Length: 455
Image 1 (cartoon, rainbow, N blue to C red):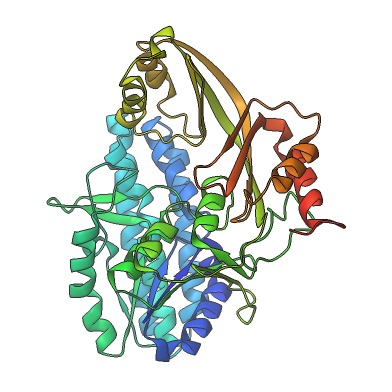
Image 2: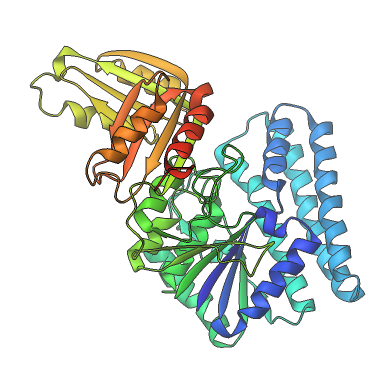
């Protein structure tokens, strides 16, 4: 059994969905379970609808609803016009969902308050719509596909917009809901990203990029032989090709390396994707749905040992510095500090400490003001916005000092605010000005992968 996840660009329109059907047809014998994202860009439009409605801009919100309705119905017509009866049924189902969306928009305009629960109710519609459309298209192309409401499988807590999956409950639900379909020789198709709160069944979402996470959780729950992430790039590359022109395909990479790259800016994977697969030792493939016969990237335990495997970077990072003489020889200070971040559900990327200060970076600033208020109870807080992170990742990075010295030499005269080597020794992270992330990535990539580079 395998789990195949198709991202938004891989189900963006009728032609993309037909390609996805062809990919699944070639994998029928491997008993695929399919997880799909919303049509490319749909989730952003849904969030905009929610925000406009709550802000009193109902006319603009309803226009956006109709634009989304037209887009989905147009693709349904292209896909299903050869079977008018099926087209009528699917179009009716899709339209009913858009009627529900319009009603939610009107309710939000009246309330004037967009709660996380309301946002999840609206943002989740993208995957609900796409999964219905994909199932119908698969069937028309000779695939025995069954639609599964993801909320029956993806059980979470009640932290709306960033719900935490409940692994044991997901495992039980996947075995109960999905396995009978697979054993019957059929293909379950479900939306990613969405779930339901344990005990209440209220719709939740896993956060942006959560469809990859959904696929990995389902793969782990079903003990799949492999998880395939189908996207619009050839696999994981040595750098973001939009930043570095000479980025090269990585054919095989270790779980830990892939996790580090995803966390520090590699766009092809959601940072949480790898963890459930690692737990079960399930290999993950990253493949291009536009080039289905390409080799892609295999993420696995057995990977070549290289000084540097790839360079990643991201901007929009905030650097927080907490200085307190109380740190010196004080037990429990660090625990108190990180309890603040836990309380505000804010992840820390990079940490550096001295005798009387701690510096950390965060890339989610949604709770920044409240976070700073609580940190000020521990010491003086300095906040620096518009920073960026560049990461040099390789499972052989710390084998001797040559790779790290070459990295520092390549960075050259760029101002560095923090420097950190991960505890595993596979990730050297540099904090620079946000505007310098791309130049730093280009310099580093040239040093390790350009002419004369031997990474």
